Length: 308
Image (cartoon, rainbow, N blue to C red):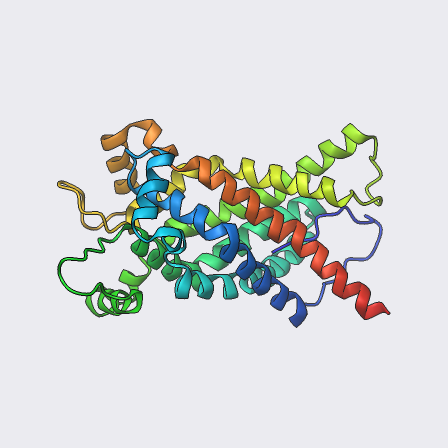
C-alpha cells in the first residue's frame, strides 16, 4: 500500500498519522483489484517459469493454457490469492506506517523512513498472511492435476492434507524466503519510485517538492520503481523452488534458502536464478502502479470528499 514519501517541511513538528479504517479498506480493495485483473496471470506464468526453468515464456503460456484454458492463468486465485490480497494491504499499511513514524522519530529523513517502513511492512506481510497463501498458490501452479486417476483434489483438500502431514511449518514452507522477498520488494519499490520521481522533476524542471507531479508522471515513476525492484529475482526463484511440488530425481526433500540456491545453481547455473523475470517485471509494474499511484489517488479522493 502507498506510503507518503513526499518531502515534508523539516521545521514542522513530527506528528503520528492515525491509521484510518478507510485506508485499510482501500488497501484490501486495491490488492483484490490488482490480483484479479493482470496480477494473477503474471504470477502464474512467473511461477511456472521459476519452477520449470527449462521453459521459455511462450512455452509457459502454452502449458498454462493446456492446464485450464483462460482459467489456467488464475490458478490459486480463489481462495489463496484473495485471502492474501484482502489482508496483506492492511498489514502493510499498518506496519509500514508505524515503522515509518518510529524511523522519523529516530532522525531518518522522509524518503529513508518510507523505505524502512516499506521493508518492515513487507516482512510483516510475509509472516502474517503471505507465507501460507504464497505456498498454496505455488502448489496450485506446480502440482500434477492428472485426469486418469479419478477427480482431482481441490485446493482446500490439498491444504488440509499438507497441514495434517506437516503441521503449520508445512503450510508455511518457504516463508523465510517470502519475507526476504517482500522486505526487498517494498523497500525497493518505495525507494526507487522516489528516485524516479526526483529524476522526473529534474527532467521537467519541476524541482519544487511542494508542487505535485501530474498523474501520468506518478504512474511513470511507480512503473519504473516496480520494474527495477525485480533485481531480487533470485530470491523469488529460490522461494518458488522451496514451495514447488515438482518431483525431480536427486532434489532435496526439505529445502532451506541455501540448499535451494545450491540446487538451482547445480541444475541451471547462474541464469536459473533469473527465470521468470520478464513476467515478474510486468507484475511488479502493475502492482506498484495499483498500490503506490492507485493508493494515493483513491486516498486523495476520499480525503477530498471528507473535506466537503
